[in-house]
Length: 283
Image (cartoon, rainbow, N blue to C red; front, side, top):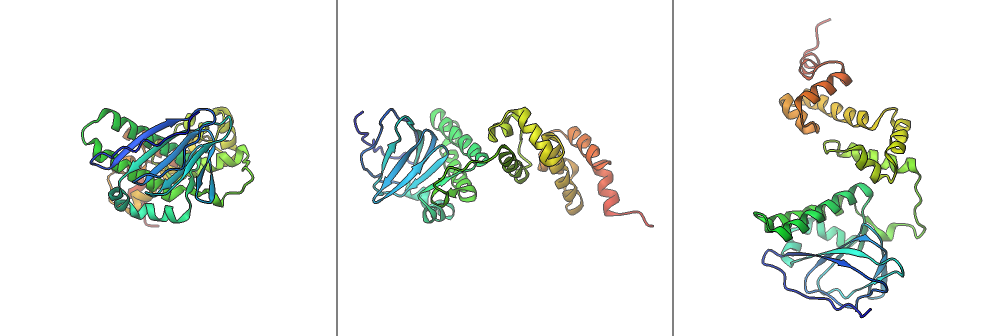
């Protein structure tokens, strides 16, 4: 295959363009640079990024942020052709996101996202591609906001690739389930289906459920419900939020479902819980 020659296109006025690249066998770019910063996210395959006298490993869910003018070269490993997305953005966009971007540039060229964060990153990329292709109302601003969210995700959860051992990490099924459960506990208010969390742990739903019971002593759905109810209890006692707002805040879409779940776990209704805990009966 001929060496790839970068297609340097001007950015649109709003300062962001996203492209997909699906490489073939023996793919490599020529050493090149871009006149604007870029963010590369690897979906599949393995390879390396050569930059001056350094080489960085690339694998699924690896992310690179390249400064404008930085000379680099991408090389696929034999038999592991990469599929990746590149988000090009203007210097103005870099400046407006400096709070997230500058620490990432100081840490390492390549960052690695854990499974739960990678799931969010891929969702953001899909949405950006859709916005760019279909041009819905205010899509320009939407792309800018999605880039900021992507950089924030990297800032919070990215692990510098250089800090990882050269020996591939082999985690047990139980370790993977613990990590997924920990990520669910951090974002309990989001929708988390058994199919999704099982996939993140790279396990069947049956195996995930079995290990969840071993770790937590309960099913995944009950684990998630308990997290939400515990948070709801704190909100009922510490805030003046209405019960409907509390239910929505902790992740329930239906008020009736919140009432049933709360009573099953706490043994009483949200209204009675708030009244009796705030004003306990005199002895």
